[in-house]
Image 1: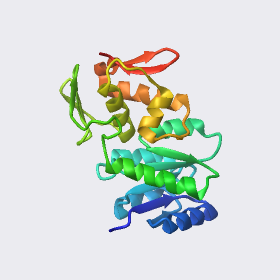
Image 2: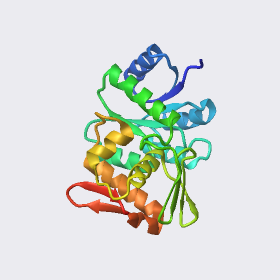
Image 3: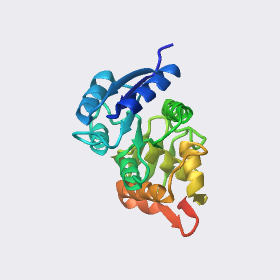
Image 4: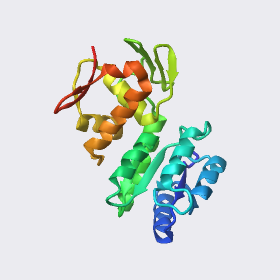
Length: 230
């Protein structure tokens, strides 16, 4: 069985060596880059199954690398885990808006590193299963196909990030049900995932914007969370 390939983009040599060692130890193939430009080029050439991306990089920073990867047709679906320092909440929120799948705050343990890598790869290998059923959904003016990660709103194809798709599918599977932010995070990312309420709210805002007039079907339940209109 082929080992899954991971690219690590990190400019601090000690952290890069630590990540490389622990990922190789966990059974992954690992390539490294130390600048944003080098990292972006290597993603296109190496075609990794997962990218660990530091936000603070020389040259183009991690957020710009993330943005470029999500815009390029051959890398827009590549999973990205951001590596962030404490106090970079705004950057974390922006990274999630750009389409990053997860983040880890430094310093982190090898166990957390390996667990997050496996969790993201596992979710990507099983698209659409977060909410249970794999059957396409047609509700209001939306068509959602989990097996293809495909969404149409009023007949128009909508490009969503992996997390945005999972969020929409979760809500649309159970119209009228109210989901707390914690339940949303647990369903999409797994239990124990550390994320702020603000990050969930930002993803909801981004999802509504992409859905256009269909975004109004995602309703805010004040003080609790969100639901999809029946």
